[in-house]
Length: 585
Image (cartoon, rainbow, N blue to C red):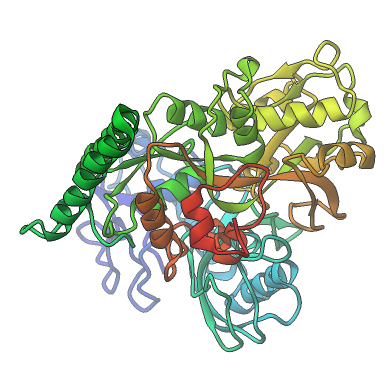
């Protein structure tokens, strides 16, 4: 049993043992926060802590006050005060109550489940298997190993996060880099896996028996005594300086140029000389530019922090430099429009942008978007499709695009390509800016604008599924609006940069049906500054072996040679056409 705290008549406190003359052997000090000997030796909080948590609010000096009362003849045991017989030690009622409370709380802790106990391993595994089936289809993947890896509170509040690690084996061949269907991006989103938390997927396709390794997380909430999973919240032969030091190849080139210059002057007089001089001047500029880029790197315009464009640009930048091309340097930006501006002013030599935005720049620009004309812009590779998402709050009465008339719509951040595509979508539905105001908003501000009613809907353009859309859905439950068939037909004509696209059912939380929309393609672009040899070297780095598939996340797995040379609404660079061959470019 526990020994209650007592005071001797001199007011000294004794904890866990009796005062002089009252030995209580076989007990361990309660002040050391242990149970008495003979019981389980379990550490427990101090008495004061237990009583405070129990709501008794005991103060450490209450016993001293009772001792004073006892000395005045008010002993709880009927003894006399100082004027009578020697008083008995006073047992403090408050501490008896605290001890009882401590025992009750300890019993509750021993018999009740921990406050944040999550489902056992088998139950958690069952939840994960259900997610895999929804994301990858039935029977494609089977879990061979599964481990729980701990838990943590959800930073958003109101839930817990259960972490896990597992291995999955493919039961049949599958292409996780497919542009449509069940790609790795969908699987990663369903399993709460970070962009680089799934390994084993092959850009050229996986075979039956291949193993994927996943570190994932499920968000769980306790409802009616059980845990419920919450919706799920990327060679050139050598540089000019590598010529033979004896100059054999360089000497032959210079001799041939000298012969052409002399022969041209003799044959046609002065008419040929300016042509040769122009070509020589251009060649010298190319040599100087390539030498500078070999020293300092090729600047590549990517995207905003955390975006797929930024992740892909960083992955390209981390590819090892090869012959004929220096390292790539990723530049941050707001998106497609700013990337083309950076290329137009020479800050970037390559960039990533939406195909519809690039086509506008090629055709003369768009002053209303601050999009410059860039007639020398050329495609190097088609990367992956980006679908238009028109989202409204789940409880909104808006059911179709026509319902947006007279309401404000969020259309993406300044400098992003989403604003250009959003405008095309709205106009195709007859929604004029005069009656349906456009509000430029970065992704982080959309949730607040939807909640407080500043906008009735938001339009984004992104890979499917998109992490930003998933995060937005956690803050404000969303419903996606399908585009009207007539508008889709008008936007996807033979000469138009947009294509038909369907967002499969179940891609986003609460999405019970497939959503018809349009998509553009993310494209790797270059201007006229990069030479053919440099572009060939860049494409070799990007597509040989696994390229960026190992570091660019699930989106990078979709960048495949078979689709990179697919038809685009803008022309390919000659080096890209040669690289992809007759079937591409």
